[in-house]
Image (tube, rainbow, N blue to C red; front, side):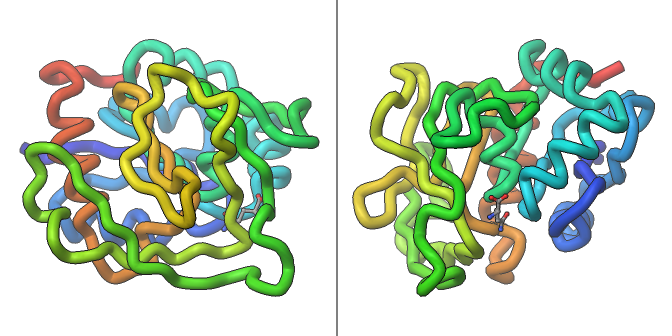
Length: 208
Ligand code: GLN
C-alpha cells in the first residue's frame, strides 16, 4: 500500500528524507503550509535549525495544525532539530514556539563545538523488527541535541542510547532521534517508521 508521508520542507535537511521515503515506495510530499497536511498519513520533521524552523512554522500558521494532528495520533518522526520541535521541555530555550508532544527534556547543541559532528555505531533493538538487530545503525550527529535523563516521561520508551543518553525515543506514534537517520545510507529506520509506526496507526487514518 502506497503511503503518503508529509515532510516539513520549510528549512533544513528535508530533501534526503523525501528521497529515502520515495525509495521505500512512499509518496513523500513537501509540507509548507497547512493545506499540504491534508491527506498525509505520517509526518517527518527534519533536522536543520530549530529556531529558524520555529519562526517559519509560526509564519505559515503550522504550529496549531501540526500539534493537533500529532495529538490526534498522526505518526510523526522528528530528527535532530525536528526532535527539538517535538520536545515538551527545552533547556534554556523553553519559550521556542513548537508543536511539542514528547515528554522529554532536550538541550540544544549539547555535544559542544569541538565535536560539532560525529558518527557513532548505534545498537537499536526493536521487538518484532529483526532487520534492526545484529547490524549497528550509523548515527550521524550534526550539532546534535541531547535528551536529558530527567525529566523523561514514563510513557516515553528509550529505543537506543549512546553514551548513556537516549538518542532514539518513542511515545506511541511519536518518534524522535537526536541523529540524522536519512544521512547514513541505511533506510531501516525509515522502513520501520513507514511499515510499523504508520502502518499500525489505524487503517486509512489520514489527516484532513
Ligand atoms: N543545532 C541545531 C538546532 O539546535 C540542530 C542541528 C540539526 O538538526 N542537525 O536547531
